[in-house]
Length: 110
Image (tube, rainbow, N blue to C red):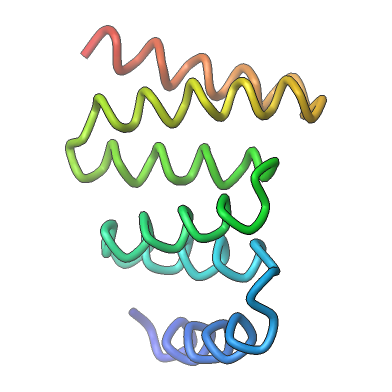
């Protein structure tokens, strides 16, 4: 992790302690951990984001990606499918729904 990323992680940790119901903070932390290939930490954080904001479709996509990066294709596929349901219910963008479908298809063809 770069020094700037380390500082951002510390800032986001402080903020998530102060605002534990803000799923965006967990999501952003998870993205930083994915960037440094710390996928298990990212999985924990994306799961926290979904726990506090169950309709956070982007967090499902990131969680599925982290599972896939760890080699857990079955778990990734389940998360992507859940994410598609959430995204449909939340009337998310067509692009996001297509991205979920592409990930599921890619896993099925792997």
